[in-house]
Structure formats: C-alpha cells, structure tokens
Image (cartoon, rainbow, N blue to C red; front, top):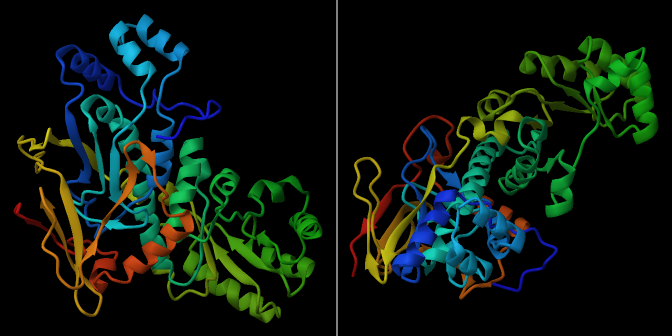
Length: 433
C-alpha cells in the first residue's frame, strides 16, 4: 500500500480479538505466510429481496490503506495479553501487501456473488475480516434499501434525513450509501464535506415552537432564506399553516413540508389549497417514517419530493447485507466449509453476468478455479482494487451512482418489484475447467 500519512487515523483496532489470536498462533506454528484467498459473499438475500447493492468499497480501501498499529497501541495489546512479543514485532511493520479485487461500487449482487476477494498471506489477510465485513455489511444494507426507495419514488427526489436515528459515523456512511443508490441529497453536513453529497435542510418543529406564533416563525425563516425556502406546516393545523406560509412568502414559496398524518390525504388537500391560493408552483415535500412501501403507496399523490430517515439508515428491516468472509483457497488448493446450513464453495471464483441480446440480464455465472465460459452479452463483474499492496484508481462516487442506475435497467422488470420473490436472476455455478 502507499506510505501511510501519519496524520491519518490508523484502523488496526477495527478488528476482533480473535483475529489477533489466530495471527499469534499462525506465527508460532509457521502457517502465517501461507498464501490464502478469502472471499466475501452472502448465502442469501434478506427475505423477499430481489437484489442487493454493493456499497462501501471505496471507504473500505481507504481503511485498509490506513490499517496498522502505533507503538502505544501495541504496548496496550501486549500489556493486556492480547499479543506476545513476536506478534507485537510482526504487527509493528504490518502493511497489506496482497491483492484485492471485487465488484464495483454500485454493482448489484445476488446469493453467492463473490463481491470481494482478498489474497495475501494468511496473517495479513485474516486481520482484515472484521473491518471488511463491518464496512460492506453496513453500507450495502443501506444502499440496497435506498435503491428500492429511489425506485419506488420514481422521478421524485428523495432526501436522506436519518442522521438522528443512527450512530454519528454510521450517519455519514449512510448518507453516502443512500446517495450512491439514487437519493438526491442528504441533511448530513459531514457527508457533504467528506464525499461531496449535496446537502439540504430547512427547519424543525422546534423552530416554530420557539416563536409565539407560527406566522412569526415563517416570517423569520423567509426573511433569512428567501421565498424559495421550505416551510414546515404541520406543527399545529396544516391548513392554517399553509395559509400562513403563503401569506408570508407569497405564491413563489418554494415548498411546504408535511411530516405526519395520513400523507396521501394530506398531500391532496395541500395541493388543492396551494392551487386555490395561487401557489401552483409551490412544491410539496413529505416525510415521516417513510419506507419503500410507503413511497410506493404515494405514487399517485401530488407529491414533489420525499424525506426518508429511519428506514434508510437501518436498511429498511435488513440492517446487514449478510456478507461473510471465508477462506476458500490455501497455497492454490481449494478449501471449503462443509457444516450444515453454512457450507461454502472452495476455490477462488470469477463471475460474469449474462444478458440477452436485448440487454436484459439472465444469470450470474460463477466458476471456481477458472474463468466462466464466455459468450456474447457476458460482462465480467470483478475489477482490481489493490495489486501487490498498491491501491489502484477506483471509480468516483458519481461514477458508482451512474453505474448502479445503468445496471438496474438491465434487470428483468419483475426483479425490481417490491413484492417478495426470488432473486432477480439466478446464480449458476460452472465446474472448473
């Protein structure tokens, strides 16, 4: 990997105790340097889901580059008995020198898809298990949910507003993953600073309650932000709130937001009232515990945008993508776990997605110990991220966002449905050549 910037926080402790236990034992018995291949995949999608979305790869690669241990950390690990002197010396010079390949961010995945492959010595690769899974499981779960929501919303933009419903750092990662998956913007300023995600926001109910009268709150907000702002009109009575909003801002008011109640009915009533007041261009933004099903139910309502919070940052009922990190090859020999319900397929795998001449995807073809047979319409899914410890150029967030939108157009239409069903395309395995 590139030389580490000493100002960058090291990520070596973002792992589990048992990773260091294995490294310690492997150094003692001589297996630490055996060449190994680990793969990240999921055995199944969350119940009823048709596809998943890979997200977090870029964040993970940055974390791998920063993976290491300073002297103070090693002294603490040694004092606590987590490592011995030999392990401490080995960790002091740790730098990942292997290879990483995988599915691009913004790619869709299915059961068995080898979304990430880590190759290196056992000791250097096993240390990355927890870090890899924590990043990819979280970000991919959020992106998978967000993609369904963006699809349900159609052309209406979705704003990610879930920062207050999750850990402060998870909030930043969630905003990034949601934007990758098709959300238009976020309320999270850190995501704007770190990743360039567009940010937006107006006011909460507390702003209205701060003032003696609702109209005073509106007047102050419009005075500060102009008539293009969005006014929250459901603190008291929505109809009265809309009337006050237009009275203050005029018919050029940017938008009103409704955050509670029967949103379908309220949106219709709000549209009729706004039009009757001459505010025909004032948009309606809805928020309040929306998920993909709630968005789909609002498809015919006169809505212009949505704010989505809790459901997106928690994966809308599936808070993890279900990825596992499994050893599949040792010194060129395929190895596999055989336990019931948690079996894995041995050998390093390659994958292509097959398509009809029309461009519609038909299957995910995976082969261990060799490339799948190629035919017209096949698209290779894995790209190199790290070679001999050197981080390669990776797609930007905008490129990953565009890639996902292109990929989703290739899935069969029934594979995009919100209703429960089988994966959008099957995963097939071809024997080694």
